Image (tube, rainbow, N blue to C red; front, side):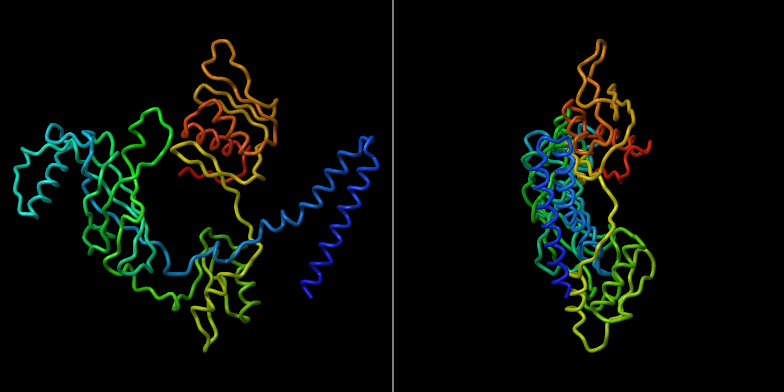
Length: 377
């Protein structure tokens, strides 16, 4: 029955769109043509706009107990081309010298710390987030960041490093491998060369967690929202059985699955259920290269922001104004209602740094011209 109703609705909308196109063609010389065409496009795209609100429960929630586990370790990167820590010539390098001396001692090699030079090595912090369901032998990505005064980690290799959840806890995994540096734009070329990653550089040696997927009894909302929680519970109760899901609070839904069913299969089925969710608008800004990701429906109302010698005016003209006498940088002028991507492109066109772009978007939000959450990564 639902499929028949959907077909009927689509047929009706197709007829409406066809009618509007015919009227527009007939009135091609009329001033109403553009308005009719715009109306036809709006009617035709309306179902797609509604569909964008559809998502799965999996995208909005996490199973209780499946929260990623953060692990960390202290390690040494070797094989650098003279860009490592300064060794015993600087206090910052003392930890690196001692660490290398301790490593060599484990291999039966004893060298006085005062005799070691570490310009080809660097002390680093190794971090990662892993699933609690990873088993022994599973691999994962790790991030490596300099702790000392190394200028660059380019060309380095991470020495095998134990990874733990807490400095006093048992090692769960180890990491090693060749470093891949992150790409980005910066005035200081070393600013993006003191951190790197190792794809599949970590390997699990002890089971991360003893949590059982099938025994999970709650869905945890990634973004607590009482409206979404209520919608999720309603959909689950309709699909499984009345009373299966109960909203505990905006961030959690309690599951009471019927006896005698396959719990794991039922949880998977629940995760795949679709709901019409209300998700908050977000703008994500990369702090390294200034790239901006935002939904096309996020617009900016009239406002003026001055930052780093640049004046951004929303609501008066469109484009980048020419340099005025005495100005080091041009001004940006855009029409009210411009979308976030257009503003981002204008700011990147005048070569603003990533942090400056983030500051401008944040300022627009604070004055009420931008209704979206700003996330700087």
